[in-house]
Picture (cartoon, rainbow, N blue to C red):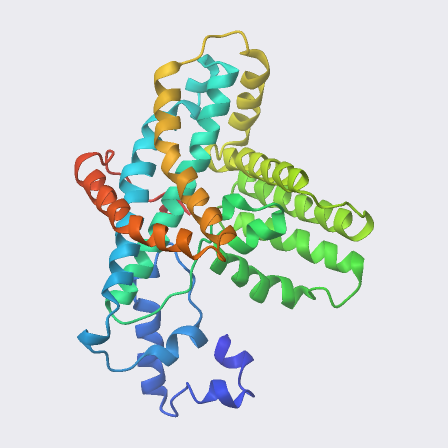
Length: 342
């Protein structure tokens, strides 16, 4: 598809050998390159094909490889694999016996788990690709600091967002055919993006939920003049995170009837006692994800303070060392990556 669409682009044609055999070999290598094969990041041909060349051991960026692999395995093995044992109370019918507060905290923990699982896989893929001399695009860019849904989709599974935009939204007409058609194209893209994860009502509703949120946000941004303050930014960030977390319930419970039952338990179980042990462990294993985002915000907001940047760089090796220690001593029970089910 990329070759056909760019057939009149001279720069792209230079990537395509004249021999169909050579072209097929390069495409086969591109499609078989294993680090991103199952869960991403989704790598496009024009990004990968120019990198196919002779590689040398001395050109491997070992520090980059080490950091990505360590953080990726820490997110997956220590955070996601431990959280999954305690967020399992969300599954049907176990959640029917839990209190409202327990269920809300468990849903918060699942939001942390799904980020650690998805981002962990992508970081491992980036590290493994770099180990072979190939560069992959960043797939997760601290999505839980987003203050809008459009920003969230620029930070969450970035390669999927760009894939949906390039192969669905723009071919449908994008924003070139008037406001009404733009809104329809945006909504259809999100619904189809939901169904891409699986043929179930929950995934379609999840896509429609995000599509409606983007449309409402588009209307507010276009027609309402809201003065931005630090308080409003914090409020919007909390609102976006809460709604995104609520949406992850549709991933945890693909059976839509179970989602309805979960909301019924939320409204009726408020008098039941808090399940303290799983709640405490969920909050404990969620802290590294929260700290990861705070680290980024602190570093970004203090770009002009050189001493803060130096201090963060000085602390980083010790943090990575602690992560390695935790991987060895405190990994959860092994399980597949969540994205393997899609």
